[in-house]
Length: 101
Image 1 (cartoon, rainbow, N blue to C red):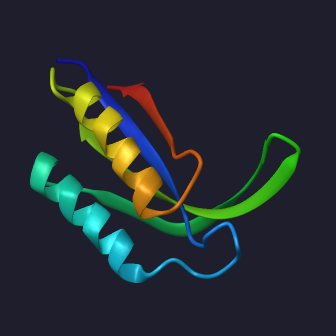
Image 2 (image 1 turned 90 degrees about the vertical axis):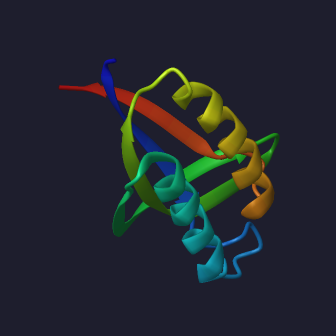
């Protein structure tokens, strides 16, 4: 199987500006460790700006990075994305995959 690095960009605050509870990040990390056996977190935040309709949003984000590609990986991340949108109360969660190795 080819190796890919998945990046999950998770917001540090809700769209109203209030901070997201640390437990939500811990829960997400636990899910990834349970599924893949490991997770790497880049705690330094990155700044993102995006629009939805006519409304502009500004996010401070962290990256959760992992994983080796398997036949189940794509399905897992599609399902995880939907859970994260609810958990973090977001219109969208950005997940990317990059070939490595």
